[in-house]
Length: 228
Image (cartoon, rainbow, N blue to C red):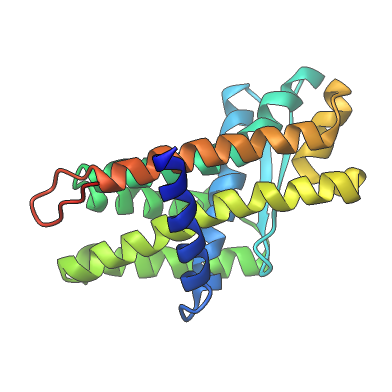
C-alpha cells in the first residue's frame, strides 16, 4: 500500500510541476514518439510494413501500417500504450543503476531512427530533428548535473504522460467509444468493449509506474541515496 501511495503522490506532484516547466510540451512528444515506435516495432516483428509515422503538435500521433492477417491488429494495437509504459519503467531502471547516459543514448537513437525511417509529416520531422540535435548536444557537451537533470526531466514527463494518456483514452472509450483510438481498434477486432481495453492500459501504466518509482527510491548510486 505504501508503494502505491508513494507513486500516487509523486505522480500528482510531478504532473503539477511539469506543467510549469518552460517548453514542457516539447518534451511530452517523447512519449508520443515512443508510443508510435512501439506500434511500428510490433508491426515489424510480425513481418508487417510501416509506411510512416505522424507526430502532431497536440501530442497526438498515428502510425500507418500494413499486415497480412487480421489478428495481428491485436498485438500491434496493444503495443502503443504498453510500450510507452515499459519505456518509462526502463528509464527509471537505468537511472537507478546510474546508467542515465546509456538511457539518454537510447532516447536519442530512437528519435534519430524514427526521423530517418518513419516520421514524414512536417511538424514531426522538425520536432524529431530538433529533439535529436538537442539530446546529442546534452549527451556530449553538457556537464554531468545538466545531463542528469535533462534525463530526469524526460523520464518524469514520460512517466506522467504514460499514465495520463490511457486515462484520457478510458474517458473517451466511455463517452465516445468509436473515437477511442487503440481501444476502439481492439474492440473491433475482439468484440470486447473499448473501455475494458482502456482500463487494462490504465492498470498496466500504474503498475509500471509503481515499479519505476521503486527503482528511483532504491538507487544504489554513490551520489544519491534514497530510502524509506
